[in-house]
Length: 455
Image (cartoon, rainbow, N blue to C red; front, side, top):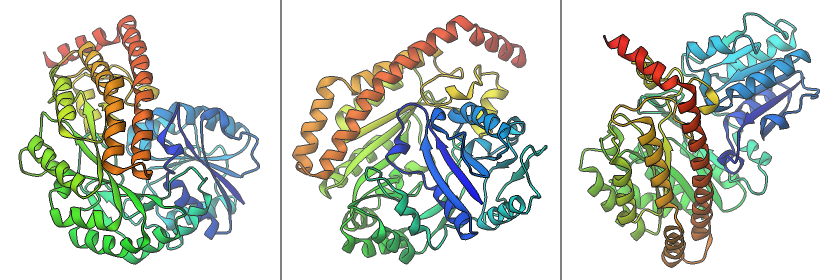
């Protein structure tokens, strides 16, 4: 039998460059059962509705949920078994919402559950049009990457950077996140990770780990074993990890060239920041990062409850004087069934539940310490200041001066040019969003509901 697996995206999306690995895991599992499997990363209009596959699975993030539902309805009319899964279905609200569109809803899944599901379909015990749909959740956290996961690397196109997982889960419990195994963290074997990295084509690679460096011995052992491969590696980590000079040195020796750090906000300390003063710690870490020949990008979330109208200028001044090689900013998005969504919804502060707007390009809630207009205006100002011509030119010149005209500087320049394009797109979307909010009256209606609730 045959299964098509889709990752949908909207607009220009990073997933075209950094291959999403979740569907490759499903593909490997399906092929081990004798099924033919095909993975596609595409927009809604590019889904093959005339496919000869028996089953179609779609990985769903909140912003692509409406598109997935539309595609699912058309596929079901063609007699396909439709599976919807992914982060959008980590809670009961969205699972109930999806019930009319599919035959199977997957919150999380392990290999045994996947095998059992395919057996049911193959034996005719689960067909198209099933009501209610089967709901699958890996409640016992039995997920493991397959031993032959390295085989998935053959599906990469020439421009896609190989992504190698080193862990499962995230040890932090940020209220705005819907991570799989949130609050838990499990490492893979060093030898397995190194073998997959060695098998990966080309010199560039990404490590998939929400907080790389958390386990000190594992990180040092892995980087020591990775060093002979001479790879140029990008990782996502936290400020608390980078304060450990031994860990930072091991990363540099092992081939790490790009560090992405979730700073989120300068107005409140998060657990992953560590215990010392935030801004001075960041600047100290940056100096050591640059001394070791690495680059660092800081990621910020605008509009958190601790942020006021002055937070945008604070981020800009920090960025302008910190030496960060790159910066990425998004508007806080209360993804459904997260703790943040439940809080804001309970307070009557969410006024928009069109999931297509849950993309960090729209405002869907009332901030606590500023107005919606102040959030939109401040965000557009910040992005414009960061991405204005002289700042972009400075970044390019400094990147080449620090790292030479090689691949490290090329990646930095490409990323910053993309961010320039993205800043224009986000400004356009936010202006449209601002007008729609004003015209709809939703904001005033939800504010009145919240006032009555408090009263």
